[in-house]
Image 1: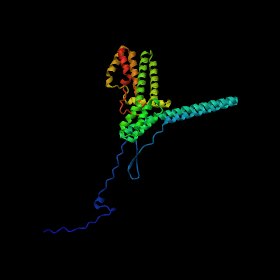
Image 2: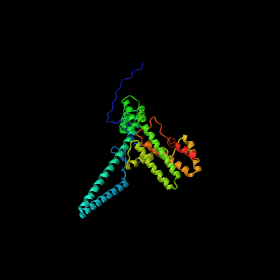
Image 3: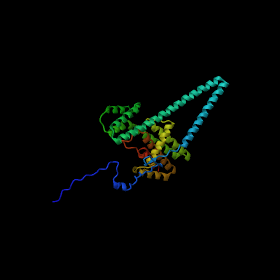
Image 4: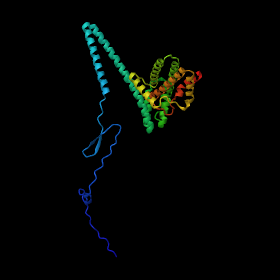
Length: 342
């Protein structure tokens, strides 16, 4: 019979003591974390604890913006000094001329204030339309019923003063706080408030495309074609913005034009659907019969594409249940007429 194992005592080292085998072995240095470089270069700085910290370098000063700001300030000071000297000279020549100049300066200041206020109002309305569209997209993606209801209420308030949409607003008020899905609530607002505006916008795009096609086919010089296409695109953008409730001034128009061109670039520019293949073939037939006729149809197609991009930018809601309009919807008659002429 074997003897049972006797109990033995063990000494537990304290926290500040190191085991003898660990003391003899050299401890490896702590690994330095890997620093990944992104779009901009980063500078590696060693912190006090020895850990490498990526620090973004200082951005370079925007010299072009500083140059234009400085030149604008100089021009403003020069104009102000010229006006002040003019009024002083008029007072020295005849006091009544000085008072007339002061009155004209006051009228100009009032007109400038009105222009600035109109520009600010137009930009504010555009930003509100963009914010509504972004909030609607966020509500659709997150299935947020409260956010969708807030979007519908704000859209209703945005179109309150339009008599043509009064019946749709009343039907929306009848629904009220009923429990609806996010898609159903936004689709109801889309059908009651935006469907009539979509029809007006598509009619405006079709009319502009037809006018551009006709003028381009009949004009004798290319410079006339280019000028009329640019003029029609600018007028179409303003008209679509006014249909959806925007009031763009100069700055607002430039903002909308940049957004529409960016949207046109993202969506493929001159891309057409499979359903328009026979119409594109008709365009080629028209171009064989008459080069000016084919050029006119092509310019009309470009105007229609720009109008659809402007519609997507100016619309305060994304397309929920309604299918987005295509070139065939707004320029189908244009292609059919070109085939008949060919």
